[in-house]
Image (cartoon, rainbow, N blue to C red):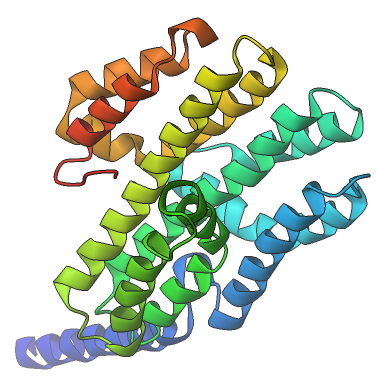
Length: 276
């Protein structure tokens, strides 16, 4: 009787393992398949284009956001965040003409944070699914424009950050379940380096504009704040003191913001990554 019971337990466990394998082959974090993730990435890029048009068509943006909303809601649920609520409130404020340029950043940069969180989770799932690498590549397309912009700002438009990311993505997407550990680490590192440069770029702009254009500085600080959320866990983990300096500066007045100080402390906190 005991032998039969043990045999049944083994069959039950095998059955669940097979089910889990089948599920992970076709789905990403939250159950989104590859085609859906590709559509979400395209919608994210479209939102970036639409929000910069004059006049801005918020109805079209809402349609695009509805494509991404399931991923945002799922991420909020898993990470204890409230981006869907924040983004919808920001879009409503934009429609009402309230601090439009500032509120736009909650939408644009908040979506980037959501996507990066899901890329990290998908990287953690590599080895469990032979499609996980393709899912990482699909989601990356939503944030690719940021890599292109930072290459323009820091490397005279010579593909540097983007090229490094593509090299890691190529290894990850082709490797199936046998993904080199180095490729995963390199992609995480180049994402964190790029978003560290994003924080630095916005503070450089604040230094240049604080005497002549305080309104633009408010936008730049909002961008820097959300960009920093993306790398904050790494900074806090490796150098809490560096986090305190960066966090306090982002909450300070424009006249207290210093790009050199931000850069030095980001380099310390990013542990092994040099921004430039």
